[in-house]
Structure formats: C-alpha cells, structure tokens
Image (cartoon, rainbow, N blue to C red; front, side):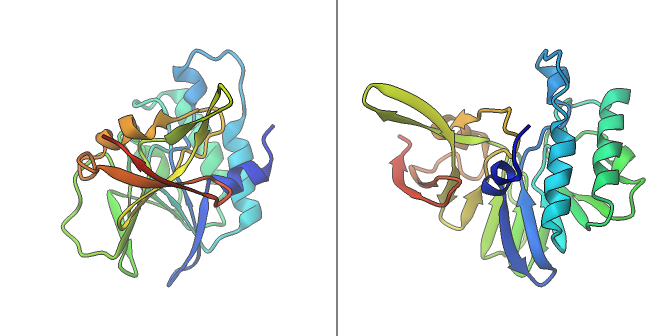
Length: 216
C-alpha cells in the first residue's frame, strides 16, 4: 500500500476562483487489466482515500482516468467505486486518449463533469494529446506523457518521475505509483504543441529543481 505522501508528491494543489484545487494526471484506473497483472492493487481505492483526505474544493483529473480504452464491465465497476468514494468532491475530468466512453459512468454522478479542456482564471487544463483549443490563457497544466528522467550517479542509473516546465506549460507526472513513466525527451514528442521544444526545466516531486535539460 502506498502512503498519502506518495500521492501528495505526484499531485499539485493550487488556488483558483473555485477554491483549493487539486490536480492529478493519468491515474489509469484498471491498469492491471491491460498489463497482465494477476494481483488487484486496489490503487483506485487508495487514490480515492487520498483525495477524500485532502478534501479540495475542486478536483481536476488531467485525463486518462482509466487505462483500457474500451469500457468493460470490470472497468465500469472500478470507476463507479472510485466516483462513489469521492462523491462529496466536485470533479472535472479533462478527457484523455484512454477515456473513451467514460461519460457512460461519469453521467451517473452529479458531481462529475467530463470536458475536452477547462479554462479557469486564465489557466488552461487539458490532457495534452490533441492540439491546443482556441482560447487565450496565461498558464496551462497537462499530463499525457508520464514524464520521467534517468539520474546517473556513480555508475548507477535510476529513473524518477518529474514535473516538466516548458514556458507557460507545466506537465504533471502520472499519479499512479505502479507506472514508471517515459523519458522526457521521448514523451514530449507526444504533445502536438510541444514536440518542437528544444529544452525543458525539470522538478522532482519534492519540489527540488533539477535544472534545464536539452532534448535535442
């Protein structure tokens, strides 16, 4: 079981006109079904517990709430349980490429809204797998690429999740502790409006600045 500290370090809390706003990216609920795991991790129950404990005024899920692209009975059951566990918290899902048919479940919960993107206080929230919407914004938050960076020290390599800053764009790591992540240089090319970026700034989940990394 992962502690709430793990989830806290991989999420982001900001203040908006909607109050305390909690951002999480790429939970991939039901990932066990697609990755051949025979053990139920109950990750979605732990995540719901963290969200309820944090008790934000608004929860924004930056896409890929679920892993399987389709909507099986099992995935539907997992999502129903997750939404029920956080039923006291207003929730907005900015739909990701894995979130096909998610409205079939979200529509049963008055506190859940599904949208392609969200604009609050000149801040844009989206998944990141499509082009930018035609709106003006000062800062954008996205997920999609599960950013990670390989630290090399003393002949030992270790891949760690990171937050990525590119100008007015901030990319969050996947909040799922069972998913390792993609190398930033490979992942950034999966974002249509960032694939030409030459360098980015990296931050550890604890907030430590790693520096600027060249991607070319």
